[in-house]
Image (cartoon, rainbow, N blue to C red; front, side):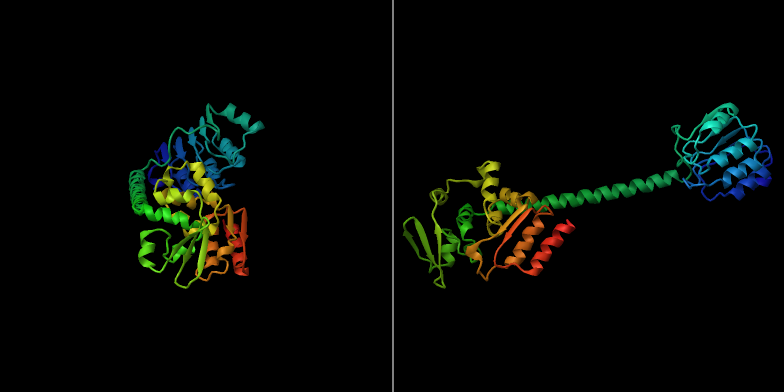
Length: 343
């Protein structure tokens, strides 16, 4: 095609990465009157790519204006252009980072050229403003918009799910919530459905007999196994439903929960209310894990090893101290080490 344009004086090829140095030689021979040539950002930042610079220097001797923004030429290619294009008045080498302008080469550029832009000069235009730019931008916009919409829908669904779960927690019977707190020291009762003092416990366990003795209560379960727990001063408030755990200051709530064992938190405390659930899900609550509860050490109803692994997962790699009794296994120790390494 270049042979059919012998009178061509200006040519802009920006960007066309498939144009090689052979094509530039053909353009130079077919367009002897070429005075202005723009060949920008066609090969990126390839190191030591002087083939194009040599082709221009050897075949475009009448050039007055040359723009090679983002070309991979180095000092050898620049010297060849200055030697081969003796009529050159302006040269643009912005983003040509393989060129190191020092000493004689820098002086020669300043003296031979009227308008010279070195590699560090700022760009005042964009390359990707050609024929396919609009279609590309439209496609990119549609992709990002669709991605954003999907993300918003997912976030909305997640918020609705959390809100529903929170509502379900808020709708819990306060009488049973207080009873759950009473059972913290005896979480076995919660799993057995024997919530002390609650209407559900009374209905499902008609054989439970209550007796008072020296400030303690004794509860006989079907298997005649007795479980004792100490009555505290707060018990009277719990029974009268005057204490609302949601109204406790945040620092006080953290202090209360922090004094409990991981077993107590996982089996009962986290289910008291939404506020306590959030606190119990915080990885900072699980930097120290205490699984030393003598009262449940011999229990067969709880999968203590699995519960311990769950507590470790909640720490999110921030575990600092862990105490375990009776049920330590090699697999559990390996899980602790592997979990912290992965996190």
